[in-house]
Length: 94
Image (cartoon, rainbow, N blue to C red; front, side, top):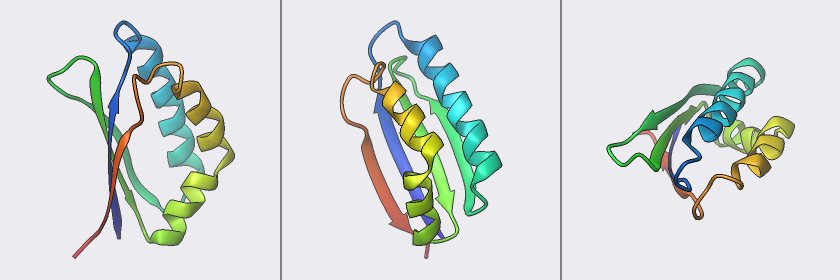
């Protein structure tokens, strides 16, 4: 299994639109990516910081996620809300 933690810092005041876009992406990932086992957005104590927890069967499933049309399309929309580049950690389960 592959685990991913993505820390996303958004522009102040964009929470509702950001969350709606992420919910749409979450629904597509869950419907169209059989190698994905978890794709869940979490709020942190900082209203402008979110954490996405992800889990994939293997590296091929993670690569399929990154290449998926819905990820590319919705990922572009996320650029409107992000205050900087996501901090992404990819980890191998032990």
